[in-house]
Every structure is written in structure tokens, then in C-alpha cells.
Image (spheres, rainbow, N blue to C red):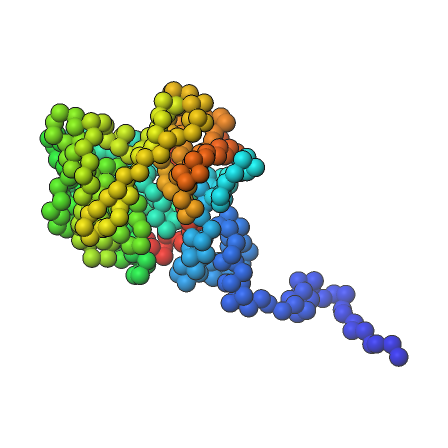
Length: 390
């Protein structure tokens, strides 16, 4: 006996028939599947429907996606050209070897900015905070520009001007993973040499109305430009200059993002060098690499390890400079040129095996003599700016 077939009216709307004969995907299943995608894919899927856009823009989804993204870190490359901040990211190689010859980047949406010369510190939970090198931009204008940018989402927001009349400032971005709270730390530098930190203030994101608050800090040192936030603590290096070009009393300052308290980790180090060399820069002339290892944070005990670099470094050329951009979870030190080149390479040094691997980065639009920032352990974030209180 033949199965009776259902008859469908020829005049019925095809879209109506499709909806009637299909089952909608549960929101929790969309949530689970989508949190495993890339930020680039989510930016396209967000346009499919209002329901999907609502899921992807929710605070819960943003935090879930960031947690998963942190487990699959990426490389981040940024540079500033013609009033725009360009960003690229690529999968971060795990245990790279000679067989892994290259990585291919994703091109993120350019972010417009009116800044001149500025600094970008290490990304913090997917966000970066570009800020101008100095605050004074005219005879009567001393407002420094700062932004919060999400490279993965191509979003940005200008921050209110810090409360300072000083010319030189330093800013850092911190994140408290317990309260899921971002804070920007800004300090003015003294007018006279050496440039010690003064007028410390904090801006808390996600509070709706943003305003700067002055905080106390008894650690008056010359802060370096580099900084990194780990488990709710912001670390940045500082030093004391004795006016004769000898850097001494080199310390690591720790800023607890939650309590807004400062403490220092002293390093018994005196070096007749410039601050840039202390941050970790090598060239073809470099024959060894020295690392300071913190053995006891309470007692401020450090040990120094020196590694003789393999002959590979001699092939770099004496004019090629590589900056230390971090250490991976596999204990490999990553180096990157500060000037964009074609071809463009990053380098991984395994101190235990004394081996080096060169990885070509493909897909970055070449701009001659352009300064480029390279970061490791970047976590993609899809958090809309309104989640931060904007």
C-alpha cells in the first residue's frame, strides 16, 4: 500500500513552507557551537538574525568566548599608518620546528585614530590601549589621547582625557579576572630629569560614566613603556638613573588591579646601558642572552641564567634588531623585528635545546620602514563596547 503523500498548495509562500518544515536551533546550542568559532566568523554570523546578534552580544557569551579563546592563543601584529591602526592575527605555533615554515594572518578591520606617536602595550583579555607618548599637543592644549580597542571586532572607544598638565605620561591596561573588570592606570612623569612617576590615577571601565580617580603610590621610579597583566596583577619595569648614564636599582613594580595597591620586586642589577637595551633587544652581533629568573618573590631572590646563542644569529645581519616579545607556554622565547619587512619573520629560541626556528608571517600588507608591534598569547574577544559600559 502506497504511503499517502502530503499535498502542498502551489500558491503557498516558499519561505512559509521552509519555516513550517524546519525546527529552530535551540539558543543554548547556538551558544555552545558559536563559542568555538573564530571572531572573524562570528562577525559574519552576527548579521544572520536579531536572535543570533543578541546571543553574540551578550555578556555571558563574551566571557565564555574569551575563556575558550585564551586556550588557543594567537599572534597579534599592529602598526599605525595614515591615521589608522592596522591589526593582523594568526594562530600561534605550538612547538614550532623547521617543518613549520609559515603562518597566514587574518586581516582585521582598520581602526581610525587621530594620534601621532603612541605606544601599545601587551593585549589584556583581547583588548589593547593605545596612548600618546606625551600629553602636550599645543601651547594651551595638554590633553593626552587614549583609546580602548578591540582588534578582533574592529571596535574602539576614545577615553576621557587624564587629569594632568604634564608633558610626559605612561599608561597601562589591567584586568581583574575575578570581577571581570578592566582598569587603566595612568601616571604623569616629572618635568625634570630623571622622569620619575607622579600623579597616579585610575580609570575603571564598565561603570557607565567614566572618570579618573587619583590614587596613592609611594614607589617613585622611572617607569618603562612595557607592561603585562597576569592573573589580575599588572607588572611593569622601572629604574633609578644617577645622571651618569648608569641604570641602577632596577625593579619590577606590581599593581594589583583589584586593590589598586603597589609593591616592588627589587633586582640587584646595575647596567651601563640604555633602558631600551634592558628591555631585551638583540642583533647579529649578540652572542649571548641573559635572563633574570625570580626564585622567591617574598625574599626578592633572583638568579641569572646566561645562554650562548647558536651560530644562526650571525646570519641576521648586524643592522637587524629583534625585540623580545615574550615567552610561550612551551618555554620558548619569541623575538620579532621592530620594523616591518618583506618577507617578515618571527623567531623562536629554545633555551634548553639551544635551537632557533624562523617562521615566516604571510598576509601583512607591506609598508616600508614601518614600525610594527608584535605580541604573543593574544586572546580574541567579541565583547561589544557596550558590555564595557560605553
